[in-house]
Amino acid sequence: MDLKSRIEAVLFVTGKAVSLKDISEILETDEQEVENAMLDLIMDYSSRDGALEIDDENGYIIQVKEEYMDIVEKLCPVDITNAVLKTLTVIALKEPIRQSELKELRGSTAYDHVQELVDKGLISRKKDKNGRSYNLKTTPKFAEYFKIKGNSEILSKLETKKLSELLELNK
Image (tube, rainbow, N blue to C red; front, side, top):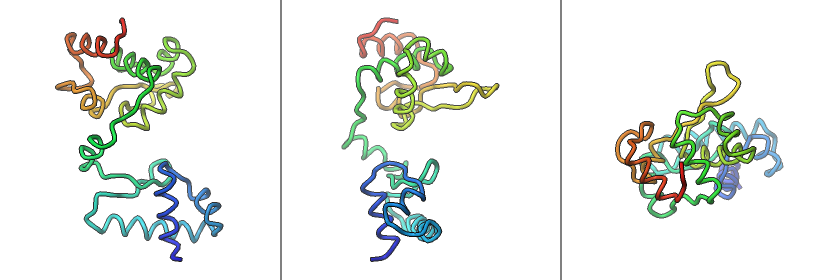
């Protein structure tokens, strides 16, 4: 079996970002060989005109290219628990909000919620000026998902009220 095909199988089945070390352990193959084959595989994906790509931002993952996300969202809507939805609502209503402030409002589970929301592409997280916390804000995917028109960073009072009602939350 071709090493690139074996790596591709690992990326396909895991469905999440995987490190070179993890891939080499799964395949019981030298990490340098895995890295060389991974680079070839990335080049293969980038040279063809397909809907998939290999992203290497936080490990390696096969994902649908951005321009095909509308199809994915129709077939696989984002699933969010009530607790995560409430955390998202606080972020949307107070954005940009520091992660430390969010923790004060939603408790320590907010850290897990933030990671889930970042993974789903509904919020972005950037280090603040002093580097001690993160600033959180919604993304265009959030606006699309909740069918909010205009700039997702600046919700009008009407849209904010609509969102609160939709989520059955009080400010």
